[in-house]
Length: 442
Ligand SMILES: Cc1ncc(COP(=O)(O)O)c(C=O)c1O
Image (cartoon, rainbow, N blue to C red; front, side):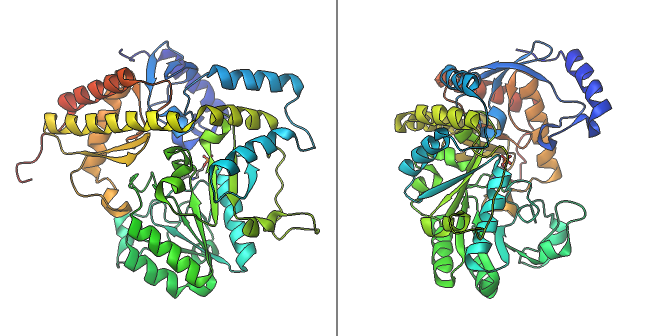
């Protein structure tokens, strides 16, 4: 359907401008000239304030794995609402979700809940420092790990700062202290030899390496086995911890991304799907490392408060959502992901337009280039590729399909083959209508 109506969203945005900077309270959802305001969602469809309906291939940036208003999750939340929503006491609800997570993932011996993925990453880095007594952390160039200042270093490093071969530590937020940049060592993604050299050179000071096994902002390119093996070997040799950020990639399988990859990190951060649509995050890992949070002997090495940590609403919603995610549910969703990726690849070929799709499982990302993508630098869109993608994304929005401006898409369990084919058809139409034909030289 066409989604050209926007008067109500425009009016809401005008009100928002009076009370929020730029009318915005989440940078990610800014959309020029103004965002469309959601009013409701059901299954894989979302309705906006002007009555436009969208097939939701974004699912609140991958978190709504069951789509919207899932009745099982809703019932669990309604029951808990009657009982109270948070207390200055722990509840059984947190034990239930922690047990579920520990049963699924062998590397999860202990779990600690936070309110977001950003907080989970912050606490994992603090835990690594507390456990090792070392000050620095290493991360991959271009990888997003939330809003913690150490974690966002070199998130959007640009060609002007690349200079020599090794990545620099580049500030993301204005005013980032130099000390933060000094304490973050940036390594190239999927380049095992270069990364190993850098890690070993700083080994005595490094508490951990933080890595997303399929970093979205760095291109949604899966980590190679060779790279992961290098990380496990180097961290083992040097005593630094291996921290997986599976905030997005936990949805790759029943045992998370680490189950798919066959690597057990020391710590893992998770969020998004484990909250069933409510705010959540968690750090999980070995009993030994997670002991830094243990308060039984007095002040822990890594104290961690949080008024809404393990609030019962997020716990029961998360448990209900995760229980629905059986191994069969993951298999089905991942097969739909394969169907979508095949459809996109076919559409690029049929239209004769440069492009490819990356990702795995129920996650995919569209790129307007044929260049082989291996890391952040190869996946960073040129101005022309960015403009081409914007045109495609705008066409899809106008024709009732919601995807991220970066080309990221995430599937949900209410989808079936019909919804995947609907998505592929509209994508194919977008390429045929707006695509630039492949250059003769290529
Ligand atoms: C890999 C990764 N880590 C951390 C975060 C931060 O999570 P949150 O938005 O819940 O703070 C995100 C969010 O998209 C993410 O993709």
